[in-house]
Image 1 (cartoon, helix red, strand yellow):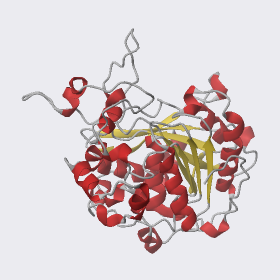
Image 2 (cartoon, rainbow, N blue to C red; image 1 turned 180 degrees about the vertical axis):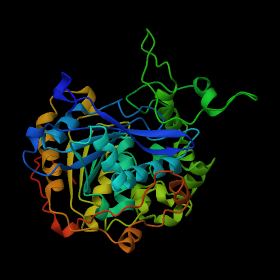
Image 3 (tube, one colour; image 1 turned 30 degrees about the vertical axis):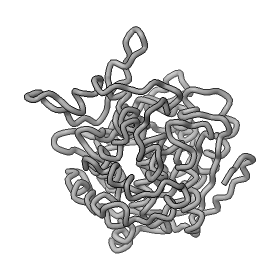
Length: 414
């Protein structure tokens, strides 16, 4: 078993390659609980698969790492998996969609157990393929939505979205160009910083396909890598959805078809999104088979607005999906990384959410059931098939009716 590091007693992780695409290894880190945390229970342990924030444009599996969440997961005797994915530019959301599903394909295949045990000299713990949850912060929460919407509660036991993107892309935050500071009062950005990524000079090589970037700053505190500011710039210029879909002018065309009022926006159906890109918009996918979900969001968040999580909660409740919400009064974006005093409210909610992984499994999913929750991945399906380790082993079902997910949280606001 790996030795613990001082912070929270988190062990050093085991690193596994869950997929290889065009010679690029996509890796994840597995954090294993101590033997005392699960006693004599099975060594096949539930796992939480987590994706980091960064607007899909920067970061990796060890940046913006939620040490507190990893600690809670391990204390339950579960495994915590922090995953890389390809980054926007030159990749698109269709590539990242494929990476998101590929990690579930890997851990729900026999090969995963073999490889994880091999890293522990043949003895130790492995991931219980029937008890996986999806979690993420900010853009990582969007990927948790993708997993829940496309794989359904047969393959994903529960979803945790921390101030997640992707709850509603039909808002001015994504559709309108900004002319004044809009994110934590930070100044607007000029295009020159991003020229190598967005408009390389003739004869210059374009950006490389990567699955992670480092958060490094110069002596003045300014980012060394423009990727750190890239998502903010794309939102500022109202082209983030262009890069997500890989279609230039997509946002402008979408904005012209969506009315200005929030009420009218919610009435719009999936027809406003071309079928080739619909798989990237969880808000327009059938919610009935979405896993039980916990949503946590600060009311003062200017990077991802609270209305996104509220929109998700409304859709899931209307569909009869168990969902709990924790709106953190006065908290901003990434409050769990930058602010103090939030633990007393968040920890109990997440502890309850983790209890979903202890429920008995309902048996393996048939091939027909697996297909029924795929929700017509449209243009993303061909990307998913490109993963050289996209294994289609049997997965397990946990029917929604088996859950008791009701929490009494004092500051729930609907």
